[in-house]
Image 1 (tube, rainbow, N blue to C red):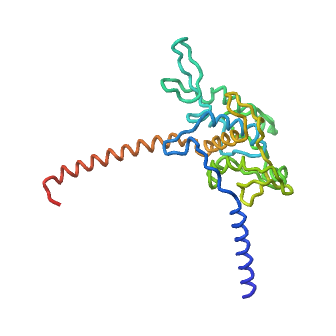
Image 2: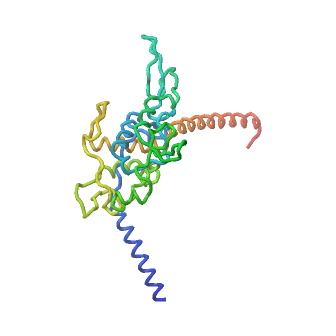
Length: 280
């Protein structure tokens, strides 16, 4: 009996300790992302910049195993390419994202931007003629290359900490994009041994070193190259990666709601017609 009580007390203390550690984290900052409202959409320029930040910074440690390179160029993707007729020159010009009028979608297998992104990576494969392992340039059909062959190698390269897969990280963490953005800007610059102080991480200490440095990733569109901008952009990219069909789903939802409102009106008119002259 005493042993059972002692075990229960230790368990309760452990749970209380975890709860206390988690309570030390500050609530994520509420950032006005463009995709948050019921009719919101992705800022595709931010998604493109966020991919660049992921590619140059985050991909050295974090995998995105649920994402393939082809997803970047499919309709709704940040590098979906359309050819739009220029009425002045009479020639077709490339355009990212669906144009307002007309335009011809370029199949992702013919998309030079996505093909270039995929070919930048070396993918482990098997030579079909010799059966020996080889490395080859990536194809659009390949999934994002993992930085480590397995979890043990990932932990060994990161001091025992396992970098989580970022494919659906915005849905896997309470606070979503706000939490990811806040975490990336929440470093105080102080350390406790091998851990880094971060006011938004449960317990206040995190094994990941500050990944973002001002000016580290150049932007061609003139956007600020600050830690705050990097964090916002990569959080937007990770939201798109977690939910690439959000815009299509919201459009469909609006159509369904409009149909239901129209149906409700017709049913009401039918009710009035059928029961006219009857007292209720």
